[in-house]
Amino acid sequence: MIFDIRLYIIIGIYMIICISLMIFNFMVVRKTVRQSAAATGISKKWKAIIYKQAVKASGGEISMLKHARFLLKKLANTEALIAFSHALHYLKGEFPEAYNDYIYNKYNVFENLANIYNEKTSVERACYADFICDFPEAAGDSHERTVGALISYIDKSNIYCRTNVLRALCSIGSVSGVMNALQVINDKQLFIHTQLLTDELLRFKGNKEDLGKYLWSEAWRWNDNIKVSVIQFIAQSSNSYNEEFLSVLQDSSVSAEVRIAVIRYYAENSYAPAQAALIKLTDSSANITLAAEAVLALASHPTPDAIAALREALYSQEWSVRYNASSVLVGMGNEIDLTKVLRDDSEYARKIVSYMLEREEALQPKETEGEKVSA
Image (cartoon, rainbow, N blue to C red; front, side, top):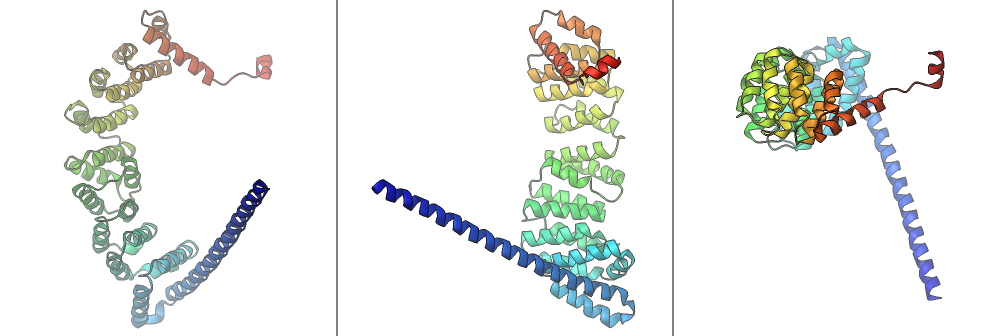
């Protein structure tokens, strides 16, 4: 009997929990719908305000100043800024001429807003930086003050804010802004993941060649994380750094991370003078990671010396080096070399090449019965 009562109590508690969760979910959904409806209503109001101001260019200077004061007052709130952004997106897409008329001569408003948000939290600063990402025109042609305010956001900020600031500076196309931002990140020892930083640099709306030149001229003053991002950015936006990167590749005092970024550049850009340095790096006794990457890069340098180095790499004690070497050789289709390896005394070399050949065969598309018959 006691057992039955306990069972009923457990079932009752379970049902109460289920009902509570249903009520909670209902309240959350209801609140979300209300907030969405309210946001839609606010966005519609902003559309009307913006469009009215844009098409009534004959309103005169007094009307413009009044609207500027209105914007400074309202847009200091992030919720209003987000609703304003939605309205601007609509105007920009549907009425581009009206959008240009509206943005024109309001640069001081957005400069002042940039300074206002500098006094706010990291999340709020990130929100304003995101606004500039979407509407870089708001910074105007003379964007130094807006850029300066954005750079000041970086210090004492979270990763989200720092990323948005970099994205905003790249959207504006400010070379000096990007350079100064990276200098702050370096000096303050702030962290941004290498690939994330590279992705933001690749969003740069200005001349990427010019940005690359400035970045490369200053990169050696910065930490390895930024150096790698600079090299990755240059590698994906230019192929004219063969000579500059070669000196880095040959310099053993440079960190492995930086040299690996350079090796990957040469994996995509064949450069004969770099071959000797790559072959030298295939010796895994110095650095295993460098050796494995150098072996892969030799795929773009299919010379007899490179093939000889790849065959030698098959005898490495490091599995990653052997694996990459066999992958490159099989990809080159050098059947004579592979046949010799399969008869070699080295178990390391035989096994890895056999495995790679079986892997390549397994990846080949199989013929159907119909294709065999038609053949």
